[in-house]
Amino acid sequence: MGKRVLVAEDEQRISHLLKMYLERESFVVDVANNGIEALEKAKHESFDIIILDILMPGMDGFSVLEEIRKTKSTPVIMLSAKGEAQDLKRGEELGASEYILKPFSPKDVVSKIKELV
Image 1 (spheres, rainbow, N blue to C red):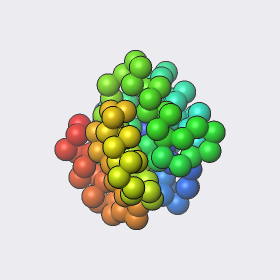
Image 2: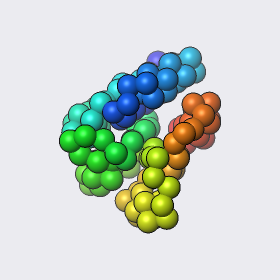
Image 3: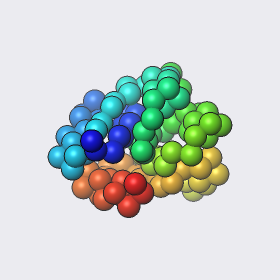
Image 4: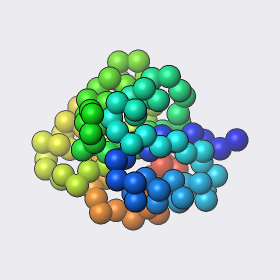
């Protein structure tokens, strides 16, 4: 069975695209459409890596990451259209493994995931 990936992204076009690219590479992909759903899945299921969008309804990606880090050390890639230095720093301080700016190439995300898992 392939490595498990949680894609937490509220834009369905992006989550569908990532899921399609990852499944082609034999990853098992679960999708969360908001921060609350992402946190529940991350807390109660086991993933090899988590892809977290920062701007999501219900709970932002930074808050989700902060909660995940209380109990798990799963690698996390933050996705964001926000490239400000303070956002990059905050992600790093909270324990993000990587920070990828939108727009991005799905192939680049897959490559980064392969490096981390």
